[in-house]
Length: 267
Image (cartoon, rainbow, N blue to C red; front, side, top):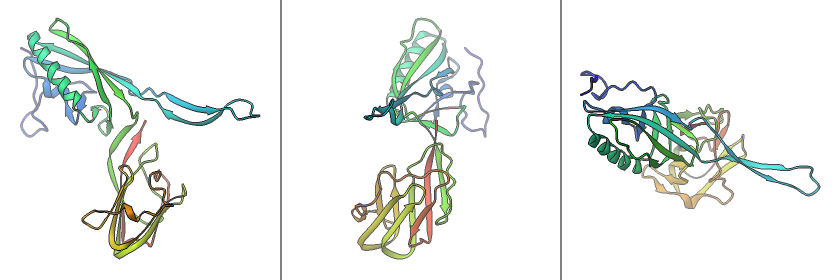
């Protein structure tokens, strides 16, 4: 039986305290402390792949041009390896733990790490080492990171029309923007003067509230969030509309309030 330390009454979880600085979190649950008890110890001892970035470079060779021209680049999918140390009183406990963990990881939406408390990874679980005989061993978990960005917690901005935005992100983001007007209107426009992108709206039905989710790509009107996509004009840059730090957003006519919610991105 192991000597273990638990959080006392009034502390956060009442779970086992594990000292790893970068414990694995699956859908917000700390795997180390969740599974560890008097007869089983689980600890994240290493994480590989979080800081490495590779790019696919798109090039072309125009006629009469000396060399190649870069058209663009995008980050490649990456892999993350998480190494767990496992110690148990008997082999059956390790096998039961790995079976339960595999099921949890197959259904997981996100992973995170204790040393990056504000960042979320949308990575897919691929495989895990098969436990070997032995009451002390290391097991590697393999994740495929299709979207190799780390997402920060959602932030909210009470925006003043035509002011410069302060966005905590290294990349442009697709925000949720809510427009609240003093009275019902049926025609309005929104322009990012920094990128030249526009969203133009016109409909025979009026509303004093409109909400755009520019990541999930939907537009609603009224407090009941009625679908309003049929009011988008053809010259709108709805799918491409993004904001970044320093951009200026101008809404016409000026709303009573503009609320912007977004998740920042980190490399």
